[in-house]
Image 1: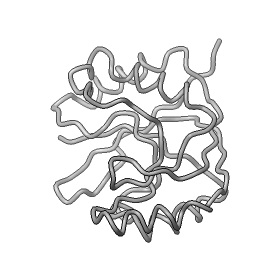
Image 2: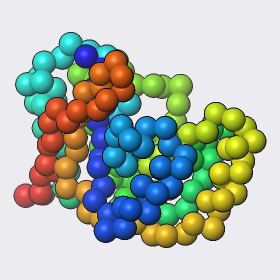
Image 3: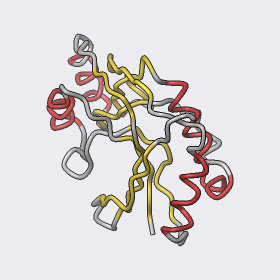
Length: 171
């Protein structure tokens, strides 16, 4: 089974992100705007065992504020909406989730940079045009992250929510 773990932020102005994604992101109709914590991985881990790992990995975590603004390019084909507040919390969740049970799935060749993908354009010229068009898009997106979500991904790249795990409050 192919799975991924995400934050699905609930922004009041989410329609603006959806409008950009409709133009530039081939996954816009398949998965809502998200911040990936664990990139797609293939495993036969049972739902119960994975859920236990998520609960263990989120011990000591708590809901936290994020703010995102500004689009930058990555790898010559991706458009990223950048995290300006909450970056450390997201990285901490990413690192904890990739410990233990999921450690073998960590992409050690890539540095993890929290972001929300708003586009993927394979044509270099079109990528540069899209990047220029988003340069003035300075809308700010703010919310509180209260949960993380595991999704299963089928062969057609359809995403289905498998489970949602709330972030516990600190005692």
